[in-house]
Length: 348
Image 1 (spheres, rainbow, N blue to C red):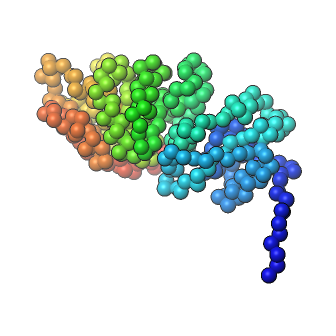
Image 2 (image 1 turned 30 degrees about the vertical axis):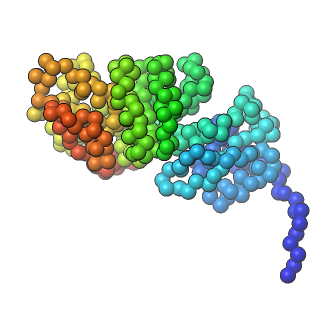
Image 3 (image 1 turned 90 degrees about the vertical axis):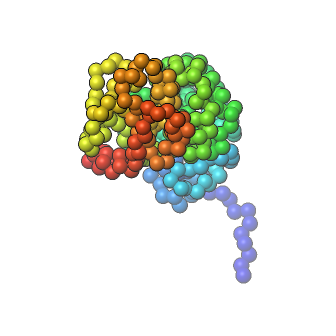
């Protein structure tokens, strides 16, 4: 047996390639990314991205950060335990290649406890960017509106239909302290008159958020919306529908009898042909729940009630919120039906 070679010199990058520069650019722009996220911006195979990452680290252009705290990659991918950010040497290299960059490595550094939230927010945003949404990062959004830089809002998502969502994310385990921060930012008016959306990791996390916010009438009465959406509904619902206008137009398109009225109140705008106010609750909008709970008695005498559209996954949560009301009737809607009917249009 031959002896193992010891103290082999590390391979370093002498002449950066276009992919080296692309790798470093996206980690500068987004501060820190997983390899899976990097591959959204740079065409690399999984194997080659591992090799490229090692070369960049050994050359001093990139550094790794351990991910802890419950980050779960999308689509069943296995978490690799590391994310990557550019170093000062990497920024210097980009400047030598003609890029005008104002930030240094210290300004891009992310506290370890915030890393899972940031990566989760990127998974949400990037999946929607794939179908035409626009994403304004948290730091740019906060700077533009002069918001608290330490706030937990994760940025602004704008749909092809023009919906603007100020969004937050949870991990699988939801801390009350995190929800208190969401509440504080909503109370402070972060992105006034824009929809507020909380993307949860899963259904238990959604239930935790709903339980916390359902009694917060002082907040809900002043918001235009407060949607709570589990991440698994991004592919089957959110990527196709971002407004109630789109949802009810979809219902009309598949033959469901809903009619648009000329009322100025958005909540009452769509009704069924048999006299119910139609409410899209596939987004678990707690402001809509508040509207139903506080609908005045004399108005109730003029309608048959509310036809609330929900899904098999969400119906139990919605029953807990509204099921005891006699004038609320639930209509199950498989989210996959939306994907089936609108997905083909989106790809054409």
